[in-house]
Image (cartoon, rainbow, N blue to C red):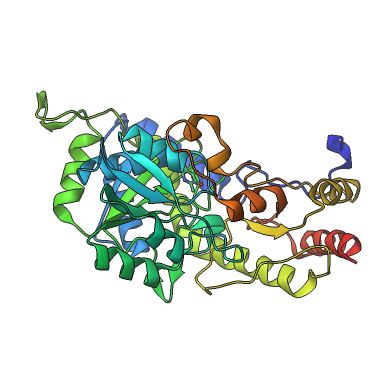
Amino acid sequence: MTASDVRVPFLSLKPGEDADALRAAVNRVIDRGWFILGPELEALEAEFAAASGAAHAVGVNTGTDAIALLLRAMGIGPGDEVITAPLSAAYTALAVMMAGARPVFADIDPERHTIDPAAVSAAITPRTAAIMPVHLYGQPADMTSLAAIATRHGLALVEDAAQAHLATCEGRPVGSFGAGAAFSFYPTKNLGALGDAGAITTGNATLADRLRRLRNGGQRTTYQHDEFGVNSRLDEMQAAILRERLQRLPAWTAQRRAIAAHYRARVAGPSVHVPREFDAGHVYHLFVVRTPKRDAFRAHMATQGVQTLVHYPKALTQQAAILSESPASCPEAERAADEVCSLPLYPSLSMADADLVADAVQSFAG
Ligand SMILES: *Cc1c(COP(=O)(O)O)cnc(C)c1O
């Protein structure tokens, strides 16, 4: 598909209705002349914590750092196992490895695409320190079951919420079920910066304090390095940009849900499966369908001018860098990796374009 044939791009990262506000935010930071650990980050942390129903938020460089630092702040590291999902961005598992711990994969529920609580129970060993579900595509994992397992076995529960800003599970905000949650503000995420950024939310003030030290070289006060920390600070420019976008996030989330509802009403057929919505708190980071004829489906969509992507073409159990650390097989995740296909879905997608996408799916699905 050449660029001129594209009628509905998968995504456009160029700022739209918020462009002027973002430019003003950048200018505000330039005029202030304060670029690291300043008033914008402090305000963003308070505002993001409030929006997420958490007592504290700590800004860091990336979602990957958010996971790794959260685990480290909880004392999880070498010798420990963290049970997590095999269908996710590779960074989920790489972050566990960054903390020095070993990712252990429990297979997914093939309809929900999030970690299967029964598989989690089966994966627990004496070395298990934590369970870390991923709220994949913006759909919360089955947190009620996972929290019960964590309590029964005395394990920590942490959430990879990189795709699930403002999502709820049975009415409760994601991130509020365990010790803490990691968010990413990578540009494609529901709340995206114009660069890399991430944050941890937690209800635990001691954990938040430790995270603030760990992200800043382990310093308790300036030039007083008491523990091994890293350099992972969300800068003022990105914080100012994220504050502008956070104000718009509830409306954008409503638009994502409206487009998803439209797709659900219009897309069906024997050869394309639309997995059901398990929780109304789904925030539709991605709208993912499944088909065993994925290559043909994507080629068909391309001829109709619709760009699609695959999240993810390999399960984490099939990634060489992770496999060497954690050999395992998860047949449901591996089958999903062969069949999943993401349709365009973003707040600025018009309903006319959503119709075009739905028509294109329909004409393939039969
Ligand atoms: C994006 C993402 C990450 C990593 O976040 P970065 O900000 O890119 O480091 C981790 N987990 C999941 C599920 C993600 O989608």
